[in-house]
Amino acid sequence: MGDHYQTLGIRRDATKAEIKAAFRRSALRDHPDRHAGSTDAAARADATRRFRQASDAYHVLSNDRRRAEYDLRLRGSTSSYARTSSSGWASSSASYGYGHGYGHGGGSWRRTPPGAAGAGASVGSIDWEFLLKAVTRRGFLINLGFAR
Image 1 (cartoon, rainbow, N blue to C red):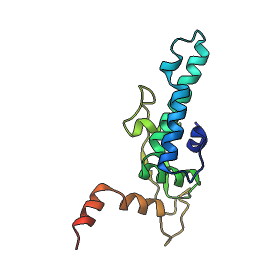
Image 2 (image 1 turned 90 degrees about the vertical axis):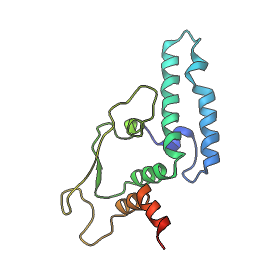
Image 3 (image 1 turned 30 degrees about the vertical axis):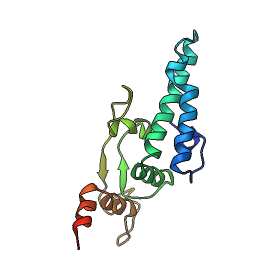
């Protein structure tokens, strides 16, 4: 798949309202029900594909945590996490339990050992992606709320 921001036709600093409006425009244009009466099967399939891409883009960009993870990945962050899925973001909807009956692959996260090839971080540096994931977990935030 391509860039989620390009898919919806928005800037990278778009607000949630702009993301929602862009998705609605795309959904009105490409929704499969709108093209159900078309006799051209290729046009129907293309509209369905564009709708799925827009749905995936909205799913990622409308959630702050998923958007932050996506932005980190989009910038080509050299972190010590590696996505072990051959399809990358195209199957991300399956990993969040979301979708329309496609992309049941998903993938798994694995942490590469320090100093391994592709670790990307030198000894003593801060792994910002790991830190972001740790402090945005529900359990951490609940404990932080009860701490005095």
